[in-house]
Image (tube, rainbow, N blue to C red; front, side, top):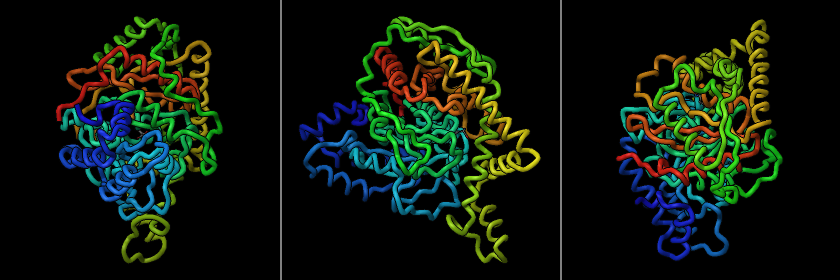
Length: 482
Ligand SMILES: NC(=O)C[C@H](N)C(=O)O
């Protein structure tokens, strides 16, 4: 068993008894990356020197230990790290070394985790396969001819490949959960506002959330504990009490009321994926939970609503990349307009350009009411569907993605098919509610993800339900043969 397959409590126990050092943990991470990343491509930047230095400082430190003491972590490359290159997997930011740390990075440091590097992703988090990285694609550790999902593909693949103990990803419409499902790991998108977005390069500000990717639910609870909380530097950060998530993991789901929305089991859902999810519901039944079919009637509009709103917000957020303030500047511009035009044409990849154009169109006068405003109204209807179901039920369960990981190249020229992969994850994003993906079995040797959605700020119940399932099953222990 690899060091990173041990539970956090075991690792901490060994560190405490000096049977293991932080330097050994970091060396194990760097060695595994050196051995496997040629095949996977999860990392864009490694910080070997910084990680080794942090490890030796922790080894010689005394006093109370942080929650994530000594654990090697990878960070998605759209979360800024002081002095450590942060590219968002874009050519535009190929020379960007931030002058500050994101709040989550500060929080990881104060919890004493060790950052080993920055993880590959779809450019500016736009994509569901990681093929939109301007540098190189990520490959799925279960089958390197397949995609790891996206946009946090590097974050999910690095945990699945045992390169790091945990990682951080970001989720706008499924970018933590779908890659976690494809790579057979745990991925949690918190309630909008629970985790600070300060220092997350904005894609769609009303949807973006940072969250953990881990090998098991208990670790997800610990990482969430470390990164959640109010931050005055993010105006959308919620000022709520943060419960002790680990103490919610009781293993007990007796009487838990599970809603199963029929719209998530229709056309386009792979029969084997459906089968695994129905088996998971039987497992819940055997533990004393009760489930019933419900309807979330506006589900069919979710994908269109999301791509209108997220592209509109992206077109506005990405206006800051103009070759003047950030990023690579076009050579020898004839005038200011030429500078803008060529810097943006050369800096952004095709998918980012597509979204900027879609979003600019949706926001332009004359079309605003028909597209952007209408989409905002539909978003409210989708949110209401959730509110109504949560009046009677504690959680909503569905597949995380309609299929398992597809092959590289299979959908890259077909943006619409690519967008439809988000059908199960987007509604929770639009409603702003928490959702986790956990492994629930294999289909033709590839991992299937189970999605559990919860009430706003009720991560504790989501984690409890996910953890109880893990206690009854062995799926989270399956590892790819790399
Ligand atoms: N960013 C996300 O959450 C993933 C989604 N597939 C998108 O491209 O927008």
